[in-house]
Image (cartoon, rainbow, N blue to C red; front, side, top):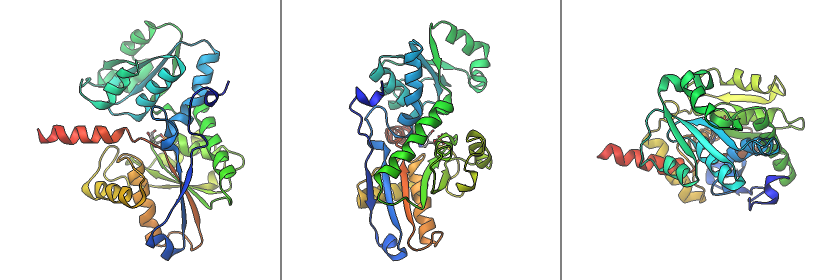
Length: 309
Ligand SMILES: Cc1ncc(COP(=O)(O)O)c(C=O)c1O
């Protein structure tokens, strides 16, 4: 059974064209695929990445989804939401201490997820650490999903999103643009045999390895379509500055589309900056994938309020 048959997912997620003076001047058509609107608990690239993992866990009679995440992780929120929606128990191994008031972790608990903090060293070694092995052994019928949710089944789910875009749009966009972290979402685009658009992946972290990682994850498929942009990480993963936060506020006022500060704010900032600087030829059509992550906005407010105390 397909998950969307039984749960009210907003699928196919809508595609909206956005308008602005700069887009008009440069003659660029910019569409946004609103994956953030799929479901309040399970959306964005996380829906795509978890979909086939959930189906496999269910069909193999696995009862507990186990995964890993930092204290503000979108992935653990989506896993907790998926567990609630599909009747699976969820457990997340959390890096470092648990702050009881953190809104991300509070949401996960509300969804019934069990949170177990481990030392940073154990966390680095994941399931090969004795500490984590001992925790996981306490649960029967475990289905393990890696940190960030990237695995073969995740790529399959993402690949489907590209087919959805091509079915929804009147003409195939010249470029597909998206933010990236582990590279799984970008790799999911590349493995789709029907890919005809350039894939521009904006890295949210300071790393020069993402291009190779994405190509690796995609087993070299369609690699000539990929460009990784490393110039808009704003200092690194989880870092931000006021320029970025002001951009996010202004973008929301102008287009009524909320963005998060970890992934989509950076990628959309970068994309518009590159449009301004004539990176794209006039007449280019672009489909930007809004990968969700909006729960992170509450986390940002929480961090800011703690800093003031
Ligand atoms: C909202 C959001 N966008 C983009 C990404 C990056 O996706 P990937 O890790 O597949 O590159 C993530 C994290 O995985 C995310 O949570």
